[in-house]
Length: 248
Length: 85
Image (tube, rainbow over all chains, first blue to last red):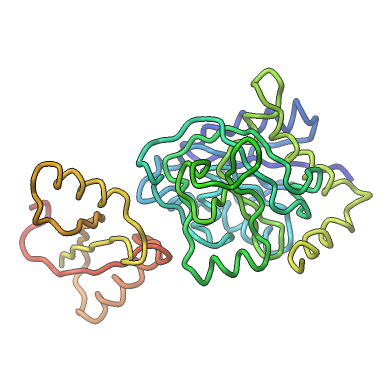
């Protein structure tokens, strides 16, 4: 079985080619671009919603992209257990789609934040982080205006209980502090997954930190984890890893 | 038939933009301003229909599209006068 990645392009996506480049040239994976108006996922094994400003962030970030025809297919794909990764704007689209719980508010300091941050691996038993260690600190850039994660108190408690938080903003030493929480996210949440563990979104950009030339290779562990999860020999393992994470 | 829909953050959700506007007003000396909440306004023109139909339609589009019910609430008012005014 060959595995194939699909990168979705919306009008306004601007990290689509970076993501494509990392998957295709750095990880040497079969990768295709998927146009948002298509109805065909081209038999990909993992759908990536890249960063950018789909539909100019009109109405709310990700609010219009969710109505694109291809999103119907992505929803069905996710329901069947397919792996879906949303980066930055892709994360916002997953929230608007209802594939992930919660919503994004404007950054607490009302500034567009473009800088390197540190994030800590909170759950390494996921198809997206299985190559990482628990507590590992990654240095990855962010670039967003609306990354201030919010969920109502009950929903937040549920997310924590089911161990859906995959990454939290932290300092270089791995301490989850208020200062490190640059955008004001509740519980320092930088990335989270759904209950089944097959849909994952994060605000930082791992595709901008996957080559030494760019100053950090820390983001590659996410893509490598997905490749490992999709590899034929571990295919039967991937779902149980997700399940395990859920019941821990 | 014209409607003005107001979308704003729920009271339980922090509104950093509203807070910043409030702070600016305080800095300017408008001490009487107690709180500011910022929101969005949509003016929508509808086909002729009964009020009941209009209310149902508005509730649907406000809930599905115009507002994100996790963080936002909405109200609407029917307005008079020609479009664009």
